[in-house]
Length: 211
Image 1 (cartoon, rainbow, N blue to C red):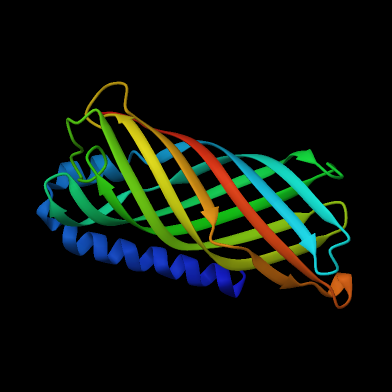
Image 2: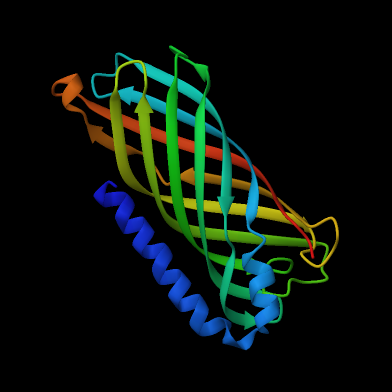
């Protein structure tokens, strides 16, 4: 496992430790109902790559699958909390230059501020909720046609609106936007002295089963 990815995994494990400490306020059944129903859904990832000589620029669209958890760790007020939102996304190139296959593994971890629907272990009766988050994202790309790989950490942010309820049969639906903050420059030996600049944003449609 790459060192940078191990750091992200360490952040997630720390989050679980904090969660188990603060979540003692919640009833045990509510706690496990929450954990056994993660965020699941599809994702579209949009990548932009350019070299330092400004002679080449590539755009890729990836279709993928994402699974994650919402951990409302510290309640601030009724229907308002600070928490942690780790997730894992796998995707494959759908369109773009030389669409012979680029695979990606995305592991973002966000510190979140959540209002209404997803702000507590039990959920809320409010029909609509909002979330915003700042964090770090481990991006790992494999260019299958050349064997080139890229793995890096970059700051990113999350914006989300959700509908429904964890307490209802239809569950909770989430429309999420994530993006790098700025870009990331990666020197790649395969390209000599050139530096490749990576940019990315993603759209996610997620569902949480109700209970």
